Structure formats: structure tokens, C-alpha cells
Image (cartoon, one colour):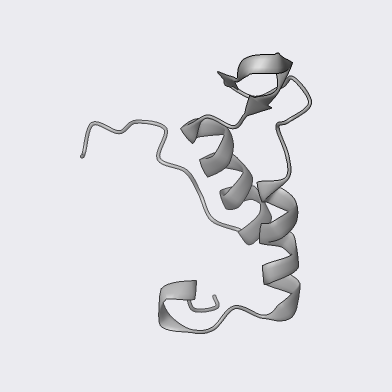
Length: 65
């Protein structure tokens, strides 16, 4: 298992993947509706996308916070 970003500098490929994730959910599929019909990812959308892309796992329950 590779080290998390907090422990190392991301690779060029990881930065590209992260940049592409940030551009998603503006097609009407995001949880947060903006004026003009644009949407942005909600926290679950964003967390699940990051976990899927970088091989992590989400904690669907936030009760431990």
C-alpha cells in the first residue's frame, strides 16, 4: 500500500486524477444545486469519488466524529 498524500508529494498522474474529479458533478448530478442549474458535489459525492479513484474506502457513517 502506498503512502497517503499527507506523507508524500502526489505524482503527476494523481494530480491529474484529482483535477478531473474536481470538474465532475456540474452536469446536474451533484447534490448541491446552484443558481442557473449548475450543481456541485455534496460531501458524499466527493468523498466517494476520491476513495474510488485512489483506492481508499469511505466511512458511510460519520458517527465517530
